[in-house]
Length: 139
Image 1 (cartoon, rainbow, N blue to C red):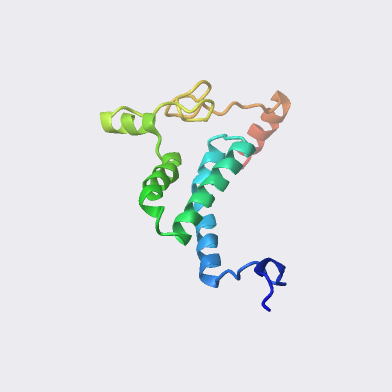
Image 2 (spheres, rainbow, N blue to C red; image 1 turned 120 degrees about the horizontal axis):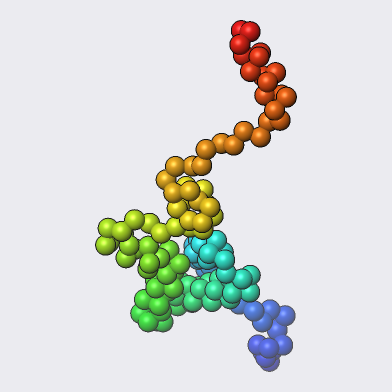
């Protein structure tokens, strides 16, 4: 008499090393656009959902060839979307100068000062300035 499969000590099928390698590679590949989205200011929860969703779809495509026909275009768009900036891309195509980036010096934004950085302000107290100038004259 044969034991029922659910009663055997080993009910989980062993995973091949190739499948584990593919799942690991997919996880590493999904980290690239996830990092880009983190730099864009996405919340931790949204980043986690994006990573897990992309990883699950990518692992499904890597493990089962049948859904690949439909999932690969969706994965490509979802993977490449974080790297595309529509506004900057259109500006580049139209030959417009780049937009300002806030308070980044030299960016042209508020407090940015345009192309040239603002002149350095001398904040040395007057009595130290006189001593420093006298020392330069004595050389």
